Each structure stands twice: as structure tokens, then as C-alpha cells.
Image 1 (tube, helix red, strand yellow):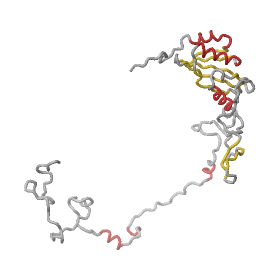
Image 2 (tube, helix red, strand yellow):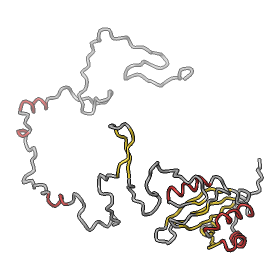
Image 3 (cartoon, helix red, strand yellow):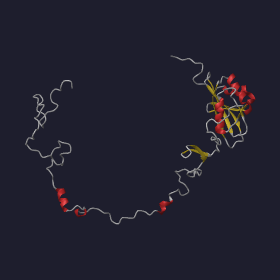
Image 4 (cartoon, one colour):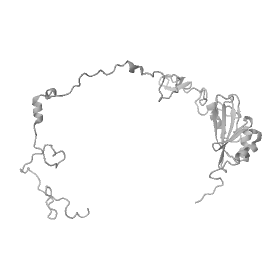
Length: 297
């Protein structure tokens, strides 16, 4: 069944960038097409108005995500990225604003209520403040968490750690205690080798080598086996004559052959299965497999 939809399978960027820049005018700080995506940088104070134009005039109906980026070397170290989707055009656009630690970004909860949670995530991870958001609380980290973990200057080990205390029967918070020095790093390639002695390598120079062996110990005569003449003579005796053919697994080819006799063992059953058309069975003269196959086989 063919499903018809107004949105194309593959949306083209042709003419989109120019049309958006003309419509937004002075709100646009920078615009480019990078890696097949339209990227607009908007003045921070105009972000709400710019997103309203994109939603109402260019049919970018959905706010898919708000993300943060940290560039510590910049004066305004944070970028807040809004990812918009046009369902009817099957097209996406990225809109960015810059902010510092003490410069709030206008909220867009007036356009998309879902932005409330998304702005809380950026605030929790980066510390970006959104003016107009009436519920700007942490959403991913724990109560009383210190700092913002996605900042580049946030320590990898954090400031506090939690564990379950058997004495208090509850989860307790404590300052981070490093079991080993995790804050000392070197970025030398392990394939090139370090220019310092690695822990444990100093023992290799101190440890003496294996002492040389003056003469290898080998067994050159029966006297050195430790078993004695009687044992050696007993081992050389033959238990039974060697078999010429191997009829049973493990017998023949130099192995002791079983001793047989013509005396009928008491209670031995008579041969069975003799049929004139197939010959006797059960002995060396048997012709197993000759004759017609049984019915149903």
C-alpha cells in the first residue's frame, strides 16, 4: 500500500539559509551551512523572537532538543544549541546563542512547554541561567550536588562521594578520598615508551638472573632409573603373544592379544540370526549386509 505524505523523504538545503537570514534580519549574528546542516547564531536577547519566527513562518513546529557546549577559553564560554524540526518539510535547523556564567538566556517555555525540562538539563550540567523559567532546578544530579559536571574545568573525580553506611543504616556523603593518585596523567604514547622508570621496573635490574647449569642431568643407564634390576626384568616380560589383526579396539598391532580356547563357556548362548539367504552370522565367515534389506528399512 502506497502511503502519501507531504514531507519529502530527503529535504534539500537549497535556498533555505538565505531565506532564513532574510527573514530574521538583525537577529542573526552568524549563519552557515556545515556538514549538511543549517546553523544560525542568534543574538542572545532575540532568541525567543527568532524561534517564534522559525516556528510560525517557516513551519519548524517541534523543539527536539536543547544542548550545551563549553569553551572555557572564550569570554562567553557557553553555547546553547536549539534543535528544531519541521515535520511538514522533513527539515532540521540548529540555532545557537552564546552566554557567560552570569548572563542569563531568555527562556523559550513560552513557545514550547517541553523546553522547561530541557533548560533544566542545561542548567544542571553547565550552569547556564534561563531567565523566565519558573522551575529552574537541578534535574539530573542529586540533591545538594556541587558544581556542574559537564564543564571542562569540573574535576573528573568530583567533590563528594556517597556510600551506604552500615553504622548509620543510610547513604552518607563524604569528601572524595582517592585510593590512588588519579590526578597525575601523562599523555605519552605507550608504544614509544616512557622516559621514566615505570613502577615495578626497578626490580628487574636488581633481580639476579637464572644460575647456569654446569651439566644437564640425564638418564644414561638402568642404574639411574631407581627401579632396580628385578623391576626392569619384569617390565621386559611379554604377557601374551602379539595379535596379527586388530579385531577389537585396543588389541592388535603389537598389543597383547586375548587368549582364546575351544572350550565352550558355560551358559554361552547359541548363535542366532542364521538365515540361508544371508549366511551364518556372528563369526568371521558372516556376510553381514548381503541379501535384501529388511522391509521398512
